Length: 69
Image 1 (tube, rainbow, N blue to C red):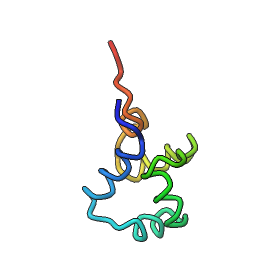
Image 2 (cartoon, rainbow, N blue to C red; image 1 turned 60 degrees about the horizontal axis):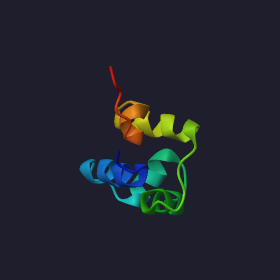
Image 3 (tube, rainbow, N blue to C red; image 1 turned 180 degrees about the vertical axis):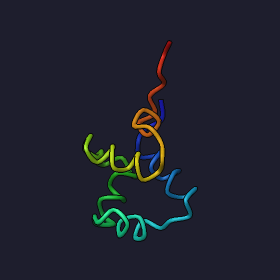
């Protein structure tokens, strides 16, 4: 399972966004983005939902969870 910080950075770079641009879009500080991507802190579950919606993916994909059948 990937760590959420790596996934957030990957998604941001794939969307060709800077931390500043993403922070503006989400109405948060760039420092929050930086802390999440570096693994210093993790976003709250409610913010994970916002991030997943922003990128058009599921929360499971965002947090790197593989659903087993």
